[in-house]
Image (tube, rainbow, N blue to C red; front, side):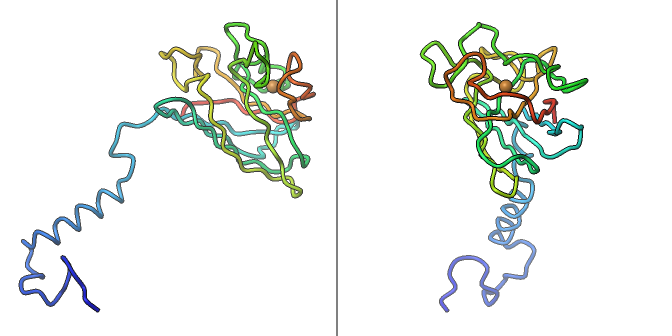
Length: 192
Ligand SMILES: [Cu+2]
């Protein structure tokens, strides 16, 4: 068997309270249990995503990292295939999804990840929905921050932001939204 190092119960004194290896093991277990909450909390935001009737069909989370924002989307009940998904400049999905206004784009950049005069700050790669209508995806963008105070526009600015899923794929070049069509899902991004 050859157990090595600390934790061999046959070692004399293992059961004593002062066993330093045991204390280290307990400390490591505690650190693992506490996890990231021991570190300064990263800026985090999230959005409940609703379909046009207002039923919640998914969630998106937005985590500030040292260099950008990591976005996780989990959603169901959408038409299969590719859909444009963008960060829109107003945190509203009612009375209809037009309330979210246009993309986050304070500098007036052209839309499109393929556009030499783009992209705007709300542009993201497409969301691909499976045949069963569900999708799980991660995105990463360096063109926004979660909280205000950085160089890039903030999701949690004064009028908030929304994540919008469009009816069709974004071709990443056509103005103004890559031919992505209507808005089929929307989520107001809020601090978590
Ligand atoms: Cu959009």
